[in-house]
Image 1: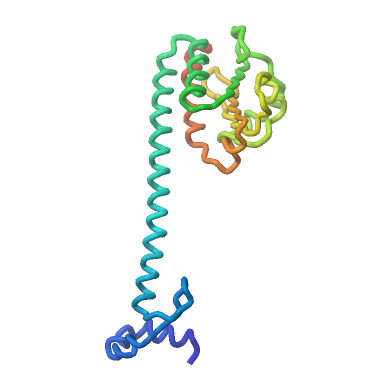
Image 2: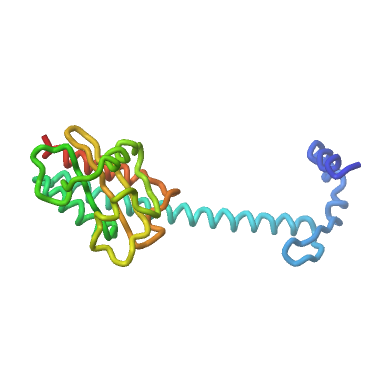
Length: 215
């Protein structure tokens, strides 16, 4: 009989070891950790301990992720309430910059808005290229990268040392077209594989807050 045939037979006849308990007691198999022969029951206990250890590690990871998500959700709640309470477009921008810096530890934030007739005299309304318009229109979800897109690096003239990660979030709504860029010197702060759910929510609430004062 081949190994597979033996394995299939034992799977199909679990009562075999009930009828031959003495054989089960005599079977010794290699210890995966020490290389010695051990009884099958001890091997099963070793496997169970390994599985428990793996499950404990996964549980610890889930708890950590859950705690991190709870903390992010709390910060999102605070910035949402603050943006809703803002009394003007200037106040919206100040509130956004403050909370991203203080609550989310994002060191550099730039916003650009276009297509507004009565634009404020702030950097947020500085002209941008048609390429930036096209790039923003193409964003279905926030975009994270290690390199700046087009000429957006020029939006952070004060940044030192060089910025190494970027998140691009479209601002879109009634009477509103724009782009919010978050940047960091930390190469791992924003990266292509990261989840963007909270970035999208931040873009949505920021867009809604701004749209109230753009007509």
